[in-house]
Length: 258
Image (cartoon, rainbow, N blue to C red; front, top):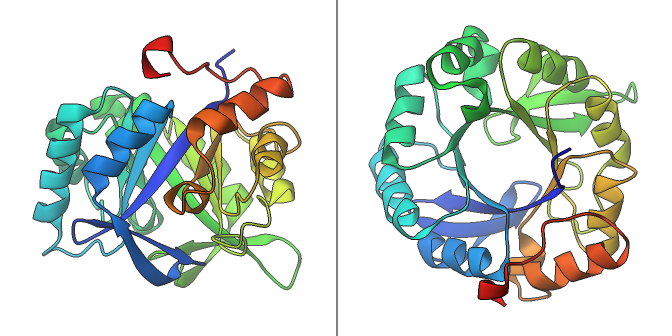
């Protein structure tokens, strides 16, 4: 059994980290390389970069940011946003990323997940599923940074992504994103019950209890957070200490980082 992971998300826009609510109202919070290094020092298990602008013009900026970060980071780095082809995956992996997150491209052409898994290994391919509850009570999958709904049921799509080769599901609740009222536990649990790969819960972390509930009630294998760290409300070290106090078997912060 893998230990539950604490993953820090850095939304990157033109070389800077930004944060918003429900994917909107973005504000600058700092340099991605410096923030990634700080969170690693606090004990983060992984870091995720999401290029939210994902423009062709910004691709060079992201590649350079990934290179600079990989030079100072020792924990795994996942990069996503605007990834369209296996060639894009390869460019990011060569720049120093350990995993590549794919959303819109997989909806347009699901075979990209299989091709990526065959070329680089399924452990390098992360399917990003952005979901919002619909009028029928289930969840719709969205693309383009949570702006465009698809006709896909988010839970069924997550299962298909895993079947096509994705080694992990990054599951974000659009409804909860930035609200700090807790993860959508029903959504997270529904996906976790349908796939045989790790599920990362994202969207809504505002307290230690939310993280605990995501890992226990939501049955996630990892929890992703951003805002409460960026705003200095807590640290990764404090989060891990709180979770350990509830007997959640997170990886301890190495003594060298204390």
